[in-house]
Length: 287
Image 1 (cartoon, helix red, strand yellow):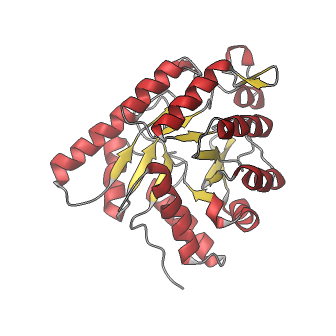
Image 2 (cartoon, rainbow, N blue to C red; image 1 turned 60 degrees about the vertical axis):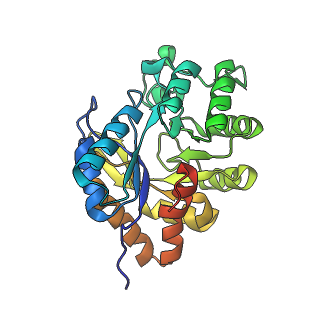
């Protein structure tokens, strides 16, 4: 059996400190771990807002300390929760101008997230009102399109995902990722995953594990394998959504994930496509 390699791998969904919730690595530790295994890039995500300034500092530190001895790049993002004013085109504009590569729709502020966690959604950030996307989202879509950035559906419900994806496609956005559809909170059925790929040619981001409450996590790998087989590897991104202290460190989790797929009969070239090729296209990386 071949051994997987993390050389050149790209993970588009990792959490790190500083954060309100304690993470396994801070930004510099995550960068060093990635360099240590030969990774090409990571996108750091925060539910509290933006990370492109943190990514800049990581890349500057890498340049000063490692002096060009590796090709690793840290990328930043923005998440449209209440902390940044929700669906706020001005915040998105600034983030993209400062180098953000991914614009995530609401996570912890999403109506779906709050309802599923039995929270009062009175202060949620809505993306759909009266059956249509909120007007501000049209401006966000324009900014994402003009910057050739990635739109992530975050913690929206399946119905919201379909509505938003259709509107984003109509607005000309090419790079759309359905965020961890396997997570119970999102709860997109396999049939709907097949349908959204078939109808809109989006990418499904399938992650290592999902929180079940009380600090407990459940492996997603068996259901992710089903999604790869049903939807096709060319539309599935392998990410970790890593950084939790309850789970293995980011690079260990990714190696376990890739090894599992290999042992289940997914060819190395297909694993490479899901961990390198798609991400290079989404982030505009040329080797």
